[in-house]
Length: 366
Image (cartoon, rainbow, N blue to C red; front, side, top):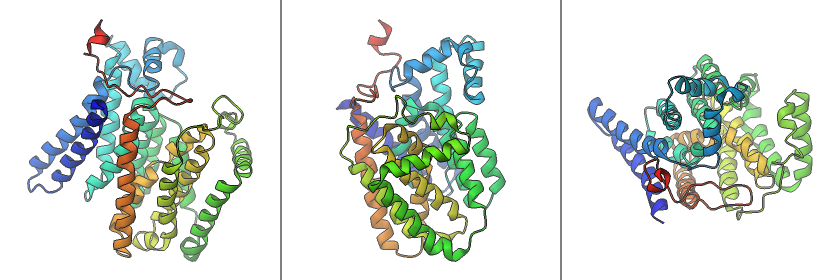
């Protein structure tokens, strides 16, 4: 239980310091509070030992780097740099913790930073222990999406390309950005698209086999055989744990965002990209509830609910209802984060999350 309280304190206190930083009159005070929040997140991640399912796999990559030249260039370069310096492998975990958190902080908007911080870290801090490459890519993707919403479209493609240097899944977010640039009648975005998106999500819930066949066909047609080959592979197994309440909460929030499409688009026409990302994210969540590998699909687009929560908080219409939905979603994220802190072993994996231990723990040094 001590570990769970420790994890929760990290999320809550880092959010508190970010919140307080927005209310400082002087920039120096603001930067000091942000630095404290930054360290609260980075230090536990940097100093952990055997925390995260793939911790030892990353150690193996570092120690046998010549066998992993095929990996993404950014990830490989960081490992190669420290390996060339003869550094201890723990410096790699420190570097990735720093990059993940620094890029996330860079992405934060100037207002309501606490909200973005809480949602992002509640959803991705634990995954950053395991899927380190992808979470760094996701931090860059969040930065890219905020640039897109700020009409800096070129920077969107630049940052997603940088993210792809750490994990190629960033290319899927980039593709959604390109898709969002295709001219579509405003009336279709306001009414037809959100209803069509919601209908597809309903079909995914009721007709899983149809959706799976379509996705495999599209992947093969696009030449993405690596991902298409997951179908029928060792990761393509049924999910046999969890109550499904988390899926319901995430999908319900996503559907509410989609059905609020008119408000989102009137607030900022560039939110069309956000609606596309929310739809694909929700579809991934539904599929992952049945087949484990689709958790990767949901992870790829997890920045969607983060940014959507931020925009929803600012919408001038239906403010009371929006806040009710948002508070409910935040409460769910906190409960989910607390549950994940227990590090429950499933039939699919062992998160190696509880108890927390560092490189200085006696068990490690013996």
